[in-house]
Image 1 (cartoon, helix red, strand yellow):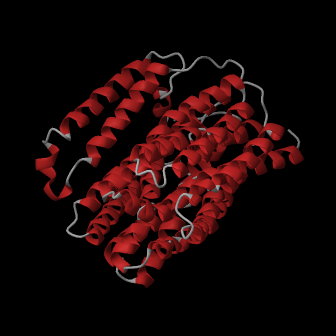
Image 2 (tube, rainbow, N blue to C red):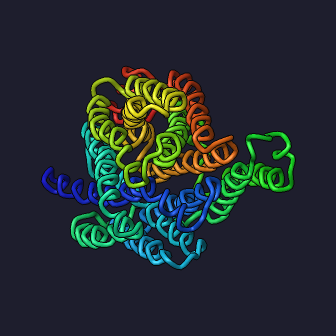
Image 3 (cartoon, rainbow, N blue to C red):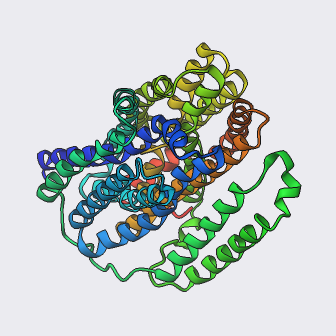
Length: 465
């Protein structure tokens, strides 16, 4: 593909991912108003996010495989259209009092969004030379920072009209993206692509859905008592059984949705673990406005603006991380990001009652997450896979990110609901994520050095080490 055509393609991918990222950015500012309208507690409010993520988990591998079978263009346009339909359903739930309608709309959004980022990454892998992929993925990753800058501003402006307008804003963006994508994206199916792994998908969805429900039902104030209750342990047991079934099914699948063979490569296994941690950290951002309302006593519309330090840091960090990938390698970039995020999480959990520290902590978290979300892990994946494996491997990145988001929303909601006060509950939740950050820091040390990472890519090979 000619450089000019590549740049146009990258532009439409940028706009599409921006639309999907705006939904993540807008949910946080909208959450206090939605929670108040529907009378939801912290645990129930977490399902506004969890229903999106669960459907996203189903949509990600399905859309990635369909893009192999029918071409990137058709599936990308389909993803954008489904996402827009879900946004409309969420907006229409306003004033009805029907939580089911709200959650259904969020699930439809998640299903459509499931394919947007993975298909965009696959297009970059298909059309960009190896030496240009880091920069292209960094630019796409910067979309999340831009979305989080725009999101709180849009949230603060539109909340006065009603929270439903925060979702209606997706509709004109979706229309523009669909037209541009149909004109510019490649549409040739991937040679050798085969059918979809439905048994694997069902097992994966069951494993994650039961795990999320079980974790969300735990009362951390009486951990052991609730863990042995009938509302928790049967769901966790069902999840264990489903995970075992998933591994057994995928070993014999011709085209697995959860390809276990990729985990034999240490670089990929470590990358997937890190992206799950990044997803958990990202999920916590949704609850920052609620923490601001509880700890600082600000109005919901003001709380949305307190996400600005996070998103400004992400907007700076994401393109910087993409550029540094080609110079320093993934290990250095990711280690630095995890360390900064961890410090920010500990600081937020300990000092959220101070406005100044709330702002500083948010900036650290955003800067750290920018080195995990978007480019770095996908850069690792592109370097470690062949063209035939690329779609499934990129799908796993999105799957593990969603797994982290799902667990994060369930656990943060459960911990917050179990606190003596809402403020204390959210403080405990962010401190817990800081502890997880320490574990991720140790995990990141297992990544390859820059020299070991570059040699296979320069030779046009894939390392299975």
